[in-house]
Length: 616
Image (cartoon, rainbow, N blue to C red):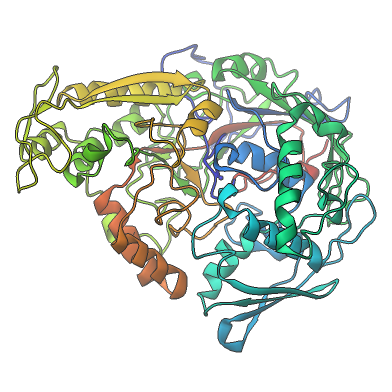
């Protein structure tokens, strides 16, 4: 979700559209909107007369990968939003504001497990591709074959799991798919985190060139040539809208135009066979370089149907006791209703364990404990985020409340404390110089030493690029830099575009040190909050290449065994060992929906959008 959430697919990386810090503040502009921020209908809503909907992209974040077989560098919520509008995944997750599977919107019926759980039978629903062909079981096999052949190039891959755990995948007929697995798995996990990765691919994509048919749909050995062709087509952004490949869709929308600067226009797919066809003439994605630039447009109330308000432009914080997704005072209530969007995910940034210079430092638990202790999560939430957010203490979100959250996560093991941060360092061989440079004075591997690979005189100085465009991240990073300096840790900050940050923070690179794309991870398309994709050894989205045999075993247990206990054992390890640095989990977007726009009643907890529901 990258997928890293970007205003982050498949367990996606994502930036946040919530922005905080000093900027233009609308003092005294909050009208008498109620607690939910709603007001009366605006007859002059932006797209009403033209029957169009304009939707603001997160700041400095633009779609740049159309094929729903994404490498890690392009594994983002923004790309996923575009992809899902065109190409539906096998199962749809999260509708009406709820987590879980929505079978009414899925391409297939509920899977049936038999043979002790090792045989899964899937019956396809009657969907059509825009070229008139049916969406068949063989289209699913096409995806699985591609995944088997090119798993190293797919960000959703985890060694030993899908598709490695699929022994056979057989299309018995057009509507029936039978999978056999190497062992029995937790059925909930398999549905939420394995079948969730599949996006059926049309036979029109089984090509090795514009004129030559491929064999990947029926033979794994034929996938390399097809991958090479499709990957090249996906890199050719200017061709997207007119491509004979990408114009074959089974979703409710088709591309009208695509501009690499982020301006993307969609029109209805009249052949869509799902329950709700698009109800407006056009849907437009609109890019912005910063949250301030977007706010200048949305506050005019004239051109954006769905936008967002930066937190700094809300004069009054909402009550600290209110739910994270509850709306507070809305300065734009004369034109918009406020619908805070809270994703089912957690916010963190990775550190690079393979970097030859600083990797040895990151491998020391005491250092990660110290670094986590200088993150003033509650301070950022209350003072700058206007109470739109919750702390992150581990991989299972603290909101919404659920039985999955362990007691350890509920009682943050590393609350903000520069005093404790300093003690972690002094107890392990470092001379802490507040306001200066802390250095290793006891090299070695004995108790109380700095640790393996750390030489005497090594300074705690690191580069930390972070996603630009959001005042929230600017402020949070400035806070962390200031707190780090109090214990002699130097963080050299640099703001860069979201796509630049996620493109650099990959496990195959040893050059980067830290990297913050701004919003962490949303659980999609692995929707159950286990750790195989993010933290298992060798996992495709394990950005920092963290590796721990104990953690690998705990992750495996959470995949095989049903119930809360295996998940919480993994969760507690992650909370105590902090393999990444946890940050406040902000509301993803303070979404402003035009008064009069109908059908936008809920935000999807996994970050997906369904503009086919929206209309005037």
